[in-house]
Length: 389
Ligand SMILES: [Zn+2]
Image (cartoon, rainbow, N blue to C red; front, side, top):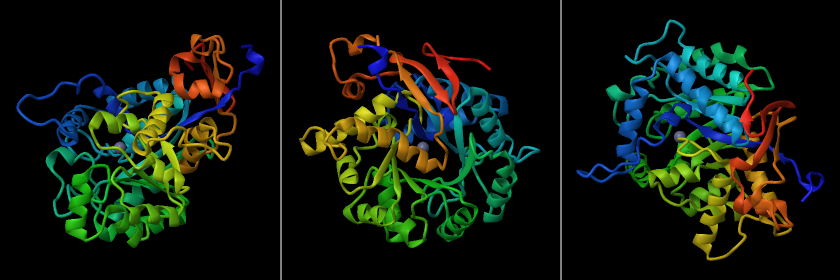
């Protein structure tokens, strides 16, 4: 296959990231023989890691993560950021210091970022924050806007954007939801939230609020075209209809959800309902957009016992995956994609003997076949390696 016939593909968008969790990779793959290993036991280890990082550690971990994202073909990232305070849970002298460190890391790496300033105010529907969550906490809605408004100057309309995240329905008081959503809309900010990742959180929400997490967010006016539901693993039919009716986006993170044993989302039903799906590498157990997209399609196949499910109107799976890998992701982050592109090495072995490169990318693509990555027209990766400075 000649270079001339090989398409340059759009840059991938990583709509859900916790960059510091990149440091967990490899350290959380051992089962404690004394108990059942679950998302909730993994979370304890994640809290332990979060408790060790100072400002420089947050910045260094973020830069490492973002560079790996670029080498994997991601040209934009949505950083769901909740390490707001120092290791003792106290405010830094500049309360926005950690947010600025993450943004600085993205600029140094050369990736576009939407910093999703994350509201985390309680440990559960009826629980205050635990000591291990004190770094994440915020005391009032006024504090949320004070910090976000202080960061507004970091936006440049091209490479850095801001958004707000409600950590989850368990971590944000119900009375805060509507004011936060309307404040976000008046500022033009995208809104993200972890939604229905674990069955336990859905059950607790139904018990405490009498509604599913999606229905609660709808009732409080949070859903809309600028809202992205992250995970959305355990949806019922009503949830699906609500997401569709509000033109919300769903961000699925298949490799992390697989790593955490979250469950299998209703990928085929979401796609067939016309709900926009995007992807995220979340905990960064692996950073590989091809793996995320392939897993989505295979989830859809496994649950419908059909093939080629996430297709476009011509029936081809690859263009739909471009929409999921790129277009919907950029929409979820409110970012420009001008000049973002990935060039694949057409001489890579996976293409030998194959006539349809996009179909091959879908089934056999991986970051090792990436040659160049451009962000805003600037070359950030060449021969698969990040270009410093
Ligand atoms: Zn997350």
